[in-house]
Image 1 (cartoon, rainbow, N blue to C red):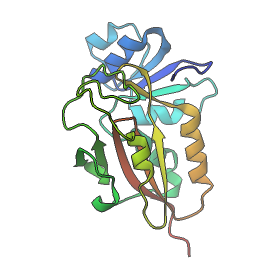
Image 2 (tube, one colour):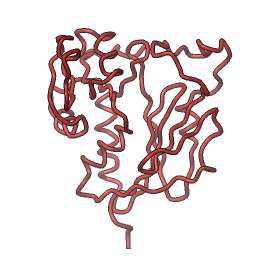
Image 3 (cartoon, rainbow, N blue to C red):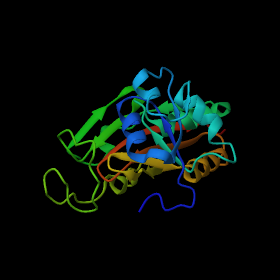
Length: 220
């Protein structure tokens, strides 16, 4: 089960509906929440708040030795790619396109901003307290089939490396990424050389988002 690490502290990025749900469901495990415009409802929850941009704050907080083990990205964007592009800005990251035909067949596929693809095994709105069971969808009571993070890991583009980071559920409807995996992927990209190209995604068992990024100029 996720959260069995010796360090169960959580950083929540975003104080909207899902950020507030994370605070409510994780309680004292949330040691900090980052939100640029915290309203009265959020302030009344009693969680420590850092007023600022979630991506920028994560760029600073995650490099601290005492950073929380888990990151809950409750933001309306693909946190993983945004954070990598900010942290590796000196490599001049460039977003590239992923052809639709390179993506797995899923129930719902949506093209978003910045060449992002959003994928889902559900063609309906999932309940926000889904416990993400391993085999059976709680809404349809039917087998889910292969998890989304495994389907997305099969995305192949010539000249690209594919990395899909799995979102681990800490509470019903609350997915999180482990700090060690975030820092490890950043270091892997940093050492990969000029012009390296990556298909980078984040996914749980049912939903995912993916983008393609080139870091550095093409090798000569």
